[in-house]
Image 1 (cartoon, rainbow, N blue to C red):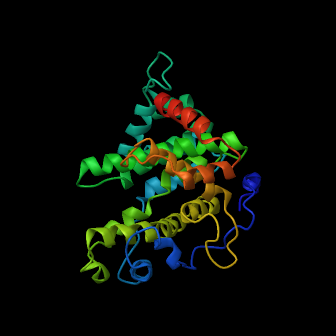
Image 2: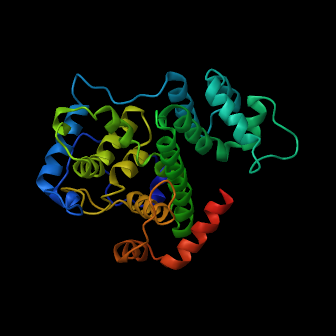
Length: 304
């Protein structure tokens, strides 16, 4: 794990992502046979590792840009050279730099000027968001794709806000929140798998809920993302008692709370109010649910 991230205090960092654990407890929340949900989920995750299936990969330019963005010492000129090879990505970065949140009166007319305006502290998060919007959160159903993008961005924003509120290092908080559900992209490519041939919509939904975090972690590992990002994706629905010797994941806990807040606010998902379970998760972090919900509403309204 990057030594700069140790202030996140994840007690027992997970080693890799090859071990796959879905216990029946992960499916208890749905009114279906837990064993069947777990079996189908396991089959899909194993299929994703098989020779006949490839997890979704990023275009080379986007992957190179994200790799460089993770290097705090990278020169802006180097990053500009890589991003400029992807016309869609470069256009997106220019659009963000000229948006009301960053505009300074004079329009940034070049990619270099846009990167300088955004500054090194913001470039990484915005670049990740741009890559996801341009190359990952795409679907023939534009409405569904937009909802997925909105939810991902809002969970990223809330994760960063939450990390700052409780003293976690927020360096990768936005990225983990942004990518927490990318496993759903892999599940779209597995939609015709024989294990799902006779599955009802409810069963498919239960399987997706159970398997997407594991598939997302595999995608993040294939993309060579930092270990903390992989862990946060894999543990955002199981930050405690995830499996043998797995320990507790603080980054998973934070993103899990951020995800529930985004749903409570109806951001890219059908709104569901916070219940006793969600409130207990928030109290565990030493925060008050009502206060945090109010500050989150303000954050999202400002788009910061």
